[in-house]
Image 1 (spheres, helix red, strand yellow):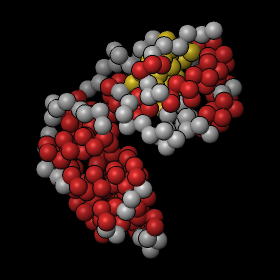
Image 2 (cartoon, helix red, strand yellow):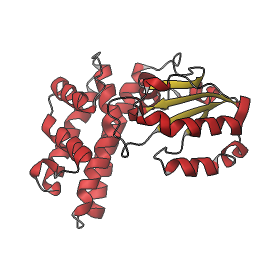
Image 3 (tube, one colour):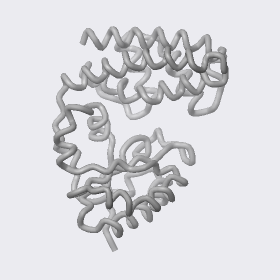
Length: 247
């Protein structure tokens, strides 16, 4: 039986879901599979049972279409249990891509649990210049996409709330890395990240906290109409885009 490690470091619900999945992956791929790593919310206190997705990174010695194909049925089964399609990478791909996706790799490096093999994230080098540039790209790109999306769905009022939640969720890694650029310790909980971000960059924390709480508890956003709230959200993202440009 293949040895899995550090399962006790995960929220209690997570090992029950991923252990059989990971063992089956190891049976499918054998010695070609070097590492299995859990990253994201499933590693800590932001994990919400039956609601949060579980993210896995699988690192291979070599990776061909045939390796993807043999995993299709297992990945489909995992999706029913909120294990999203894993990242299939090679060590070499990671080494040569940390400049292209610095936020994604730093997020994984700072918030992961190794459950099999070698920790390929531990020694991964990431440039702070690349982090700052990607933060700026994410914020300015988000502004463009939000305005475009509103033009497409603005007449369907129910879509605006989902737009806010999806946008905010995708920006959490950017918020964390803006704190890192300020040389601040990054809190583990999303709410604390928002409060520290708001303090450091002088933006309205209630805008972001209301969206976060709406996502967690399915409440009305700040007791306001979502469309009115969108205007406030766009303004705070605009402020952050200016701030990161000046770092």
